[in-house]
Length: 310
Image (cartoon, rainbow, N blue to C red; front, side, top):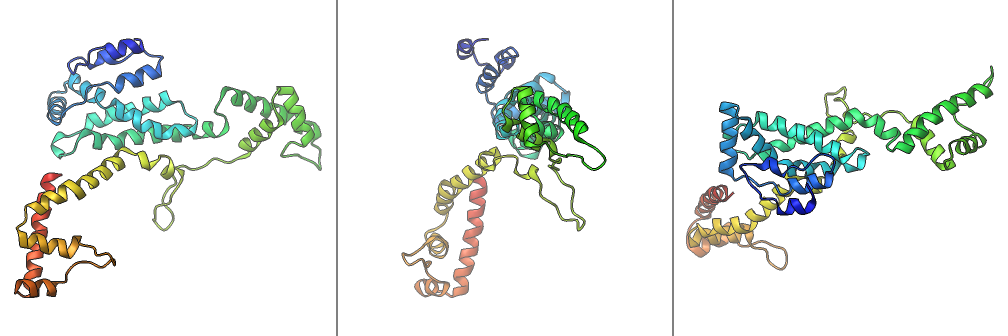
């Protein structure tokens, strides 16, 4: 299916499989999944219940297809580790299918939030299994150099070794000889020799002797700035601190609202806050304890309003 055909192809929840292009074109695949119809909350819950209660494969398929764009988005965070993007997407799709299989619509969360964990877990597992290959040789030319360098280095060391001498690394003359023989730059030979000499890195270390968690490279694989859950949480905080807060304040009576604003929201030019409990008590002709009680009741009411807004 060409790019033009994808743009003109009708989008239908009833037959979303029609949007998946033939294998072999990653760009067309990404373009297609980005055009997959999104499900409403009601549709998502309906399909999830049909799969859970009746094992309806068609419903499960619609849940998977509507979240393929999420897999593409998450997989982009792991492109700097020498692994093909298509393979990362494939492993992420496996995690997405596992999430759909276990998803319970009655838990009160959207599938997107639940699936992120499973998608990232499968991608992490794939990286762990392929880390040694990634570290030593990532391109066809590097793999060729790796295998040829090993055999040539072993032959050279056998020639110069005796009872008193055994070289562990190539001399400058041997580096030039290998570079000429393999028709590569001496710098590439030195780089590959350094890679071959390096030890394996434990990406996901086990807990330490004291039971405390230890941190390894696995903790830094993804760029959390663009992690979907972090973006969603930041957006929700922004909305709650603006629209949600304004709505919660509007639900208070005038006195309660002024007390909350003076006590928690007002900041003077010198950096100080608003009025104290005693100052507000003197203004309204009540005790400071009464002002505190009004403040506590207002906070509880605002909490309810913010929960309903969210």
